[in-house]
Every structure is written in C-alpha cells, then in structure tokens.
Amino acid sequence: RAIFVLVLGFCLALWPTVSSKYIVLVLGWCFIAAGVANIIYAFTTRIFIHIAGMGYLTAASAIIFLALGGWMLYMPQTFLDIIAFLFGTVLVVYGIAQLIHTYRFTKGGKNKALVYTLPVIALIIGVIFFFRSKDAIKLLTIFFGFGLILFGVAEIILDVKYVKAKRLMKA
Image (cartoon, rainbow, N blue to C red; front, side, top):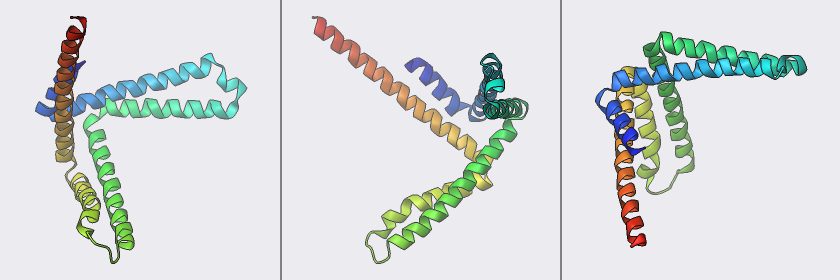
C-alpha cells in the first residue's frame, strides 16, 4: 500500500497537469459505471413497476451519472476548469461570510488577528481559484502529491517499526 501511495504521490507532484486529467478520466469512468449500475439495479429490482416515484428518481440519477461521466471523458480540462471556478466561488462566499460573522462576534475582543486569519486565507485562496483556475489546479494537485508522499513515507516507517516489534516479540 505504501509503495502505491508513494508512486501516486510522485506522479501527482511531478506531473500535475497530466495527473489531474487522468484523475478526471478515471472519475468519468466511475460515473459511467455508477450510471449503468443504477439502470441495471432499477430494472433487476423492478423498481420502475413497484414504486413509480423511486423509479423516476433512479432513472434521473442514472442519466445524471452518465452525462457527467461522458462530459468528464470528453472534456476533462473543461471539467477541471469549471470545478476550480466553482470551488473558488464557494471559498470567496465562505470567506466573506466568515469575515462578516467574525466581525459581528469579536467586537471589542482581543487577539482579533488570529480570529480573522482563516477567513482571510479562505478568501485569498478563493480569489486565486476564481481567477487562476489552471494554476490553482496544478498547485492543488502538487499539494496532494506531497501529502501522499508524506503518507507513504510514514506508512513505510510504521511498517518497518511493526516488523521490528514483531521480531522482538517472537524472540
């Protein structure tokens, strides 16, 4: 498991653009598989006959899965750009809302700088994602790659310690 995580981490960190496109392609195939599975489930359990409302809901979710999966496979870069743009929008709205709430609840309080740090960081990251979505996706992919590398190294260290402890217990 650690080797797989390390390889994946290095791929994400060294080739962020290609890696993020491959991730979207894998997710696209997963969405298509989920859509097909929903259709098969609906027909094999005869959900369309027994519960009409659930049948329509299952069919709608299958169509949504298939459409999103097809879109991810057909235009992975566009999907990444839109996701980054939407993520940036969410972070900007979150940052502004948190700044307003923080201002309301810290009137007259001390250590205001520490309380305002997280909303300001969220706002800055949101603006970066909003206006520089391609660079933000690269940065985020590299960040996750380094995180996976650290996780893989920690996993190897724990495995080595576990094997040593197991040998000591047998001796």
